Image (cartoon, rainbow, N blue to C red; front, top):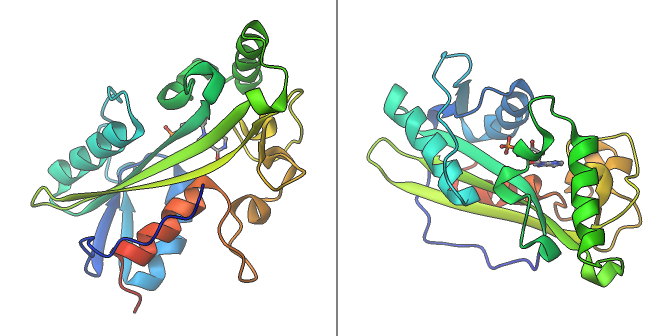
Length: 220
Ligand code: IMP
């Protein structure tokens, strides 16, 4: 992703309680740590036993927004959600918003990666230049008065085959970000997210979170 200029027209979130519109404990830990320096006390939709809305949107933005709005409506508190996925250019951006669904109820990502490779082979996409891919993460911050801010983070690279590495999750082993020799699956979590030692963030989620912090939160 080419670094876009920081936006200065965003609404900023005041310190206080914030609902994380997710039932995923890993996400709760990651977001709680990140948001602590901003005076935000994070409670998750899972802890509050909120129903999970169906992700009926056809874009990351639509799904992030419907999750955040559902959490605001159920609690009256500001809410933060995220929606993410893996997009392969030669497959018109698939699996995209359907990334989790391509792995089926068994969450079989080895199968989902094979499906992508079969489709790339069928399309004749063997040259790395024809195998452009990206990870996308969209965050939605929603307020009780109906205002929302949508923040997108992306990382571009190449869909490689065979998958490499045991780290990460989902499609990490078949994605090599531009400028790197290794796949996300071969990286430590610190390497995947980047942002250490003065380096810019690398992963789609880290890039979106950095923009959220810079544009919508007030450090205390
Ligand atoms: P969700 O944002 O929790 O709906 O997740 C969407 C799906 O996108 C996940 O189940 C993964 O398949 C895929 N995905 C999102 N982010 C990543 C990542 O960082 N690595 C690998 N797969 C990812």
